[in-house]
Image (cartoon, rainbow, N blue to C red; front, side, top):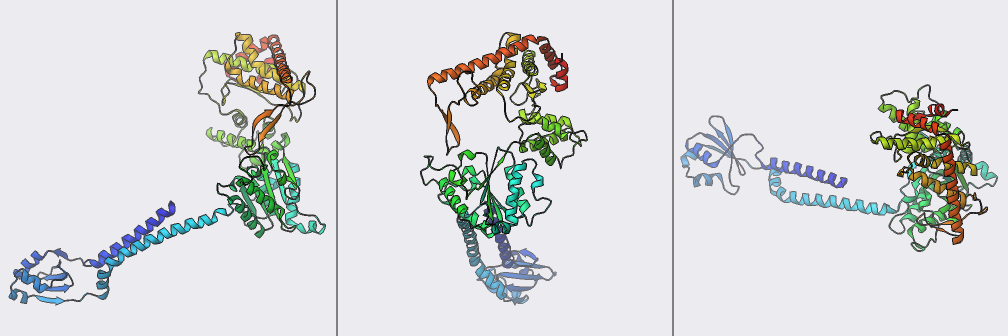
Length: 607
């Protein structure tokens, strides 16, 4: 559309130039005053005319007063005939100096041919621009099967902007694995001399936000080689054969610039298991995957092209893609622990002015389960909050507030609660906090608030003292009591329950079911799992759960779930009844100031 408007603009400008040229050439070209034929006849009869110069159809009249004027006549009619037709006496004509001037060749030919040439020229320009449009469309059609990969040439890139392993915090084991890839690219000779084949593919596996793409760029930056970046979804189009053609073109470009790195992000979009039953054996996605398999397995040992791919769904990838010879290595990126989170926060805070009292370690302690992307978002939100407050430095309150914003959503201070709803919310959150404080195997309370955030009417923020990889049965049982603490507090105080505990009940039910069916933590059902999830690989989502147990066993599972939830509810009830005065203290403090920090809460509940 833009090119069409541009061509139309050029065409219009050319038209105006030619039209103005034609007008100037066809016109008089001078500035004398124009007059009509009747005026000229009157002037001749009054003997006011000194001389007339005839130039084609233009009469240049010079008066005795020195004034000049122009008169137009018919082209085919001579001046003498014109004057006779108007009855001018011959003696009057004899007193006038008449001069006939021949037109120049240029003016003659322009005035003769331009009316014919100009329309033809305009039509020719129109056809030319339309042909260019068609040619461009044909060119784009021919390029449709070419790779759309974005090439980053690290050799020409500014060293300060180049991403290296220093810009990637945490994931130490993953960086060690990828350092070998860098050595393969920079010094392949020492490996080839020992008969070692360069790995053809490295698969980066990890949850979203753990830094898979960033690590791939860091490998390219460390090796100082070209880096081709393309998403798996960019291969597949609605036209048959386009994906395979793009794969061929991508690897052709990569071989020309070797040594280099080809990075395919979200490879599960094109690398899912074949034979899923949808689309047939000639499905376009499968043809693209087949071409990737052929290209990766067709590399010579000294090609120096390494394929990096990233996915958070390795379980759906085709086995042929994961075998040695294609993706020889699998690098797993875990969620960062507290030390890694501290280092990640340091990396992302380089360009942000922090106050002197800011402790990134304390921020890392409050963010278990956060990925690298979450931590970067946290610091960005803190910077935005500081800017909104007209501050020049980012301080701890902004960092703590941004943690809650990332976890729960923004504060909804405009949401007006009635006094009754506010009181119910205060008892609900106080119930969660009190049960958490009393039971020994739960995480300590960091903050309690009855200010709405996101979809939550209030919240109790719990943070573990250390990162945990394994959880015991007793921890889960007490966590169930914590989830039911708000529900039981409402029931004990008001004798009624509200819809505010819906998400807590759902979370408690799901946790109990996982304890029994996945973790083998039931009382009577033994150390086994129940059910296996089947999913349609092509769609990549769960469709149903396949039962490997009988209806009688399903009844026992339901009975176990009911037992554990009732037991947890009774445990929470005993805590609330025993520590009722502390519950009232927490509620009164929440109704007064709406938010309690860890120190204030512990002061209220201490013995």
